[in-house]
Length: 146
Image 1 (cartoon, rainbow, N blue to C red):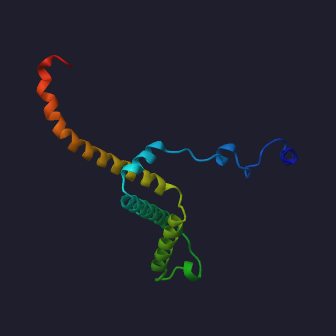
Image 2: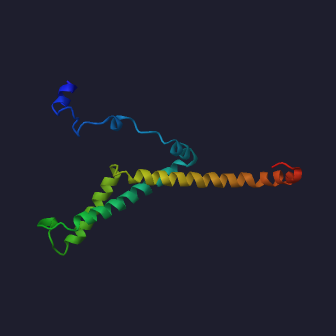
Image 3: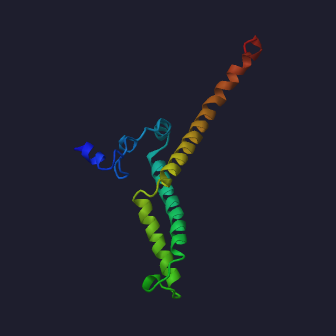
């Protein structure tokens, strides 16, 4: 049955059919998985909220640009109150889009925030544990070992 569907398009697969790459499961980000073990759940929730808010701000900017040239009657008309109404509308659109998954910006922002927090927590725990051990290991520095 699938061959008759493809044959109808002269052997070409229509754009609406999913490709193999789109059907496969997303690749696991091992660096993020490791970083998530180093960051508290409370900090993860705060980073997720911050990333979603950032994406909402970005989308609000995009929607504002999109709506700036719209003219017409009713809520899209050119009246004195339209600007305020339109800004509130675009703000709500952007918040709803970001909460529904957005365009993918929040995922990258979340990953960056978690990686930075894991790195800072890792470096702060290493500096605290290394400060006492370094003083004892440096006393034998003149023994010819490199």
